[in-house]
Image 1 (cartoon, rainbow, N blue to C red):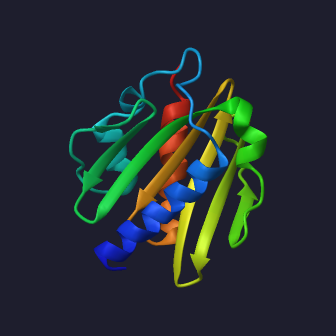
Image 2 (image 1 turned 90 degrees about the vertical axis):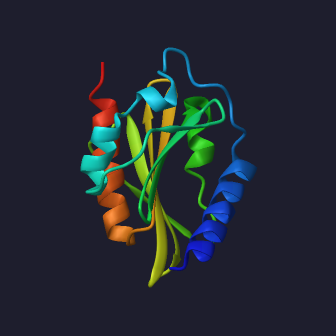
Length: 153
C-alpha cells in the first residue's frame, strides 16, 4: 500500500472510532501510554528497530520504524460495550486469553485489510494498532504488544 493510501486509511479508521467513542483521560491507575512499552519490546514485536516513543495527546503513544508505525491508545473501559458495537464493513472477532475481554476489528477488502486489537482490563481499554504490514502480521504483532502491556503489574 502506498504511504499516502496508508495515511488516508489510517485517518479514516481514527475518525470512525473517534465518532463512536468519546475519548477520556486514562483510566484510574493506568500508566502514561508511552510508559506501557519499551522501544525494545515494540521492536521485538515488529521485528525492526523503532525510534523513541511519540506522545499522542494524553491517551496515546506511537513508535516508528521504516514502513511500520505502532500505536497504543488508552480508553475508558466504561465505553467497552460501545467499542464492541458492530460497524458496517468491519468484522469483530473475540480474542481469548487477553485481559478481561478482547477483540480484533478487521476492515477493508481481503487484499487490503487493516486490523486493530482492543483489550479491556479493569477500568482501562487498550487499542493496539500496527500500520504497514499485512493483516495477519498486524494481528500477531498486536497480540504480542498486548501481552507485554498486560504482563505489567
